[in-house]
Length: 135
Picture 1 (spheres, helix red, strand yellow):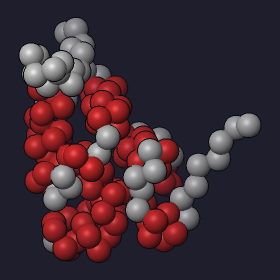
Picture 2 (cartoon, rainbow, N blue to C red):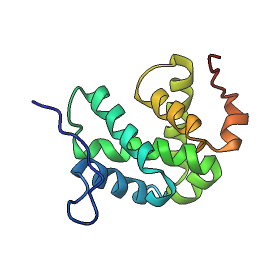
Picture 3 (cartoon, rainbow, N blue to C red):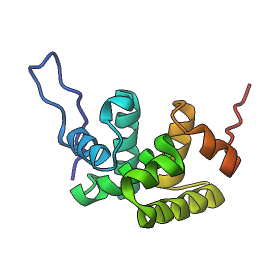
């Protein structure tokens, strides 16, 4: 199956692509307003999803990704307040695994959030996250 391209729309004439609409919906459900996430980050996110899935991700994959992004932006307390302790514990386990393995969708999302300067300062400190840049 050919990979569909994502689209932000254009001057109200053409609508947003399905993948970006689904991501926006999932971000809202995780209590992160989509306007707090730059469009470029959302586009990179859906592309990471497509790479991880080997094609178009199913609609049920977006909440999984949105949880990690919301956790990265809101931090542990903000995420738990909106989504509960059970979801917090699940996403914290994913964060630990992503940082240990250093590869995969979750690791890519954390790195993306860090480079976009969206990563919560409390998480940077708690997990000792840094991204070395080549000079």
